[in-house]
Amino acid sequence: MKSIIILGDGMADEPIEALGGKTPMQYADTPYMDKLAALGVTGQMKTVADGFHPGSEVANMAVLGYDLPKVYEGRGVLEAASIGVTLQPGEMAMRCNLICVEGDILKNHSAGHISTDEADELIQFLNEKLGSDKVKFYTGVSYRHLLVIKGGDKRLDCTPPHDVPLHLFRPLMVKPEVPEAQETADLLNDLILKSQEILKDHPVNCKRMAAGKDPANSIWPWSPGYRPAMQTMQEMYGFNKGAVISAVDLIRGIGVYAGLEVISVEGATGLYDTNYEGKAHAALEALKTNDFVYLHVEASDEAGHEGDVDLKIKTIEYLDKRVIRIIYEELQTWDEPVAIAVLPDHPTPCSIRTHTNTPVPFLIYKPGQEPDAVTCFDEFSVLNGKYGVLEKDEFIKELL
Image (tube, rainbow, N blue to C red):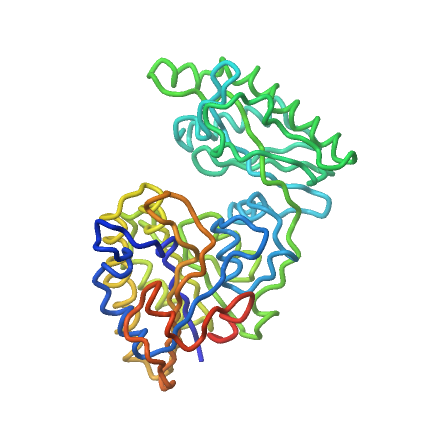
């Protein structure tokens, strides 16, 4: 049987007093999620392995059944794959932010959300001035870029810049975790300081400052890793072809390593104004030629990070009516049965505006299966579901 996972990033939450003690999932009008829960079986999934932070890359890899302690190599390598950079043996990839420093203070992690066109000019300049046989910069999107170091040692203590706004940057620079990594740490810190020297007077930054914008006057490399030793999902589960649909580089990068075709959808933004219908129709089209489709929608996570309860409810309802409805109703007309799973990757509670590692609700609907007693889909209804709490590859094996 073919199968599709519809993942609402960060959709799970906690009870909110203003909603009468309900979560956004409970409060939202979601007739199609509730219908699938009533027709299917439900439970919880532990998507954040012990010892890991509840990042989207961690949780989505877990949903697909990967053993995180064995394969996790950080964000840099996943983003490398999504922009078409194939890491060779011995190469280390790092996320490389363009940041704004003011004196000795790390002002912000995004250089005032610099545009990709401006950033590309700076990244090319960095390559020209600081690049070598050993050091290469690659342009990503906005402030999010890639640094590849040949022969780099990933055993480094790096600070994510979004965790430390308005802190002194020098105490937060790269530190080796073992003596063998000292050379790599020294190289990276040298690149940081040299980047500050050459970026401060670059025409892009002069223009930004004249317009009252933050300059992108430093690089900040973090999250080092090597090419992950990930099997493809075809090797793990035996299906022939699969596809991933997402606007998010991290998820697309996971898809590359997982052996999934990466499908782009016009108007897919990764925000609440994304092209929901376009993604639903692309998923249906992909199901005609693939055995497995992973449809990732970021919108609810963004609403959670903004702490916007009303917007989060709206994104959950959009997912239900503008994605799940279209897919469910169309599949009812197909001769071939298709299994549907719906779940978040992690909670992003509006109250704290960041991710938590609480297990998430899931549903699995397979035409003709015996349903459990659950008749609506939310964080608490599934506590009465068939499965209890699944972890590692238990969820994906139940679906496939």
